[in-house]
Length: 355
Image (cartoon, rainbow, N blue to C red):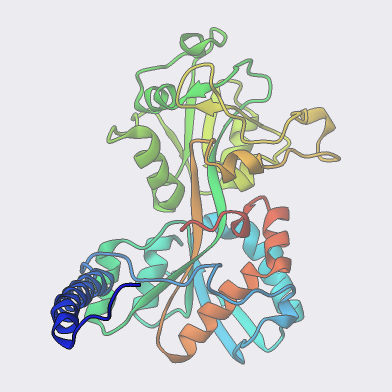
């Protein structure tokens, strides 16, 4: 058995231990302070921290969502949300009569996300239906007005490319699309199709959302050709495409994929590696409308389809407006809301919660 150590020997052993523990404690405090500083310091232009479907309460039906404010609330936004306004907003009105929605059409400008966010910051709207996330300049403008903007993703949409249903074309790469819309490719024979002049169509640039996404994700700084034909709305463009064997058009996948009179085509980043925007097998025009093509959900979820983007509900954090905007997002994120979004042609955000 080892003899007991003397008090002096104990002190000699204890002192270095205390010093070591003190050093470890100090380093830990410094490390925690550094980590905390990283967590709390936010660059001025960084997007505000916004709740997502992961932080909002989960509800099964519209009637379970709470709190939902009482009153009439104004909103506006991207034309890509048109199917949602038609299918889902009307269902919300039917089941939550205390929460009345009033769509605002800007009097002197087209309805789009940018105009709607401007109206929101002016206090003329309660929330915005946006086809994009907030821009740093919008965040800064809100801060200058003493406001904080919140954005909640509620669905996934994409850009689909449509042609005449009789056009025999296997697919297009993003580069071929850019060359078509910049005027470098003018005949379908140049991309494996028939000897037929290409007629590129687009929505008016005032539509903003899908146009800006196409410019950034496809055109990469190139300008549209001067030969483009522009249309004021989706209906007019699709009607013209259905009458134009050489036509091509791009727009919201939620609106294009189910159409009977045109054909959405596969696209890809590389030739022969095209991704279809619809679920296989493809439903022929002659079988429509009894059967309709549906969104290729899996390709959108894993972003294998190259042209996808999120839809956001955007609102300010002041009082009743915050309650109205958050309630609308919660209604869309409920199981009932997500099911209706899927039926309207969008991909459920609950399956893809990345903002």
